[in-house]
Amino acid sequence: MTQTDAKHVHSPVLVIGGTGKTGRRVVARLRALGVETRAASRSGETPFDWTDPSTWKAALDGVAAVYIVPLDASPSPTPAFVEQAVASGVRRLVLLSARGVNVPGYFGSPDYDGGPHVQGEEAVRASGVEWTILRPGWFAQNFTEGVFLDEVRGGSLTLPVGDGEAAYIDAEDIAAVAVAALTEEGHEGEEYELSGPRALGVADVLDEIAKASGVRASYVPTEEAAFREGLVAQGMSEVEAALWTAALDPIRTSREAALKDGVQRALGRPPRDLADVVRDAAAEGAWG
Image 1 (cartoon, helix red, strand yellow):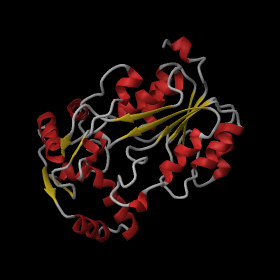
Image 2: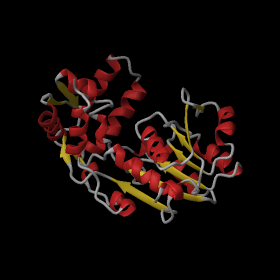
Image 3: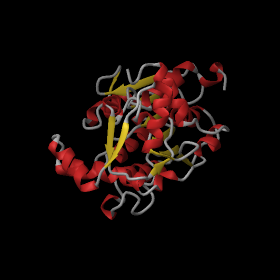
Image 4: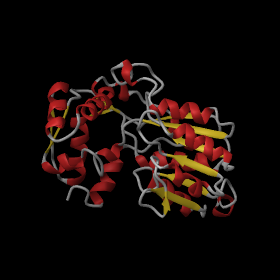
């Protein structure tokens, strides 16, 4: 798509979570195409707060398409937001969901089935406008700018995932698929399962980081109960610690290892490898 074409397709676009891992990348790609874009967040240029519905109307005013990064809370506010978006004239919705939310027991317990991501998916499907759902697995960027970064910098990463593997997805690939769905035709009604091109254990990821950066961190496997107790000792609530541990279960069981074709189907090319992601991050000084 040319910049001239993109300016006239489903514009302006509202990007919820416009300062987050995928949101800021979506904003950058849309603006590079010349698409009028609103980056929405609590502290962003377009004020938006999931917990304050009074902020939604102004953010949605005149918007043609929305990239939705949902609030991970139950009950989900996404259905109410979708209803308001459609009422305001939005014609296209692209929802960031998560891998496995449509698979009973994916997170190791039926207690997590039918959660906020499922509620969001149901809402966009029933919206009556064009929609696309993205279901990425674990982000490669969790090691370069996210939850694992500090431990990697500190020399060891402790996780309760044993020898489990995951096909970590590049957040840039998620953003590229989102932008295609927001600006192009042919993605309506698609549910894109997104993964990287190969499955890796945590030790494998740390080896890739060491090769790219010279920073070597060791992987320290631990039991789930000990991991939860450690999180609580650091100040996390029992509920939050249990949720975080459950989120890691698909890696422990290698449910995240299966390769998915969403990037290829959406973009006509294979996904980027984690080695490419860590090489870029090393060049930017991610690990010092």
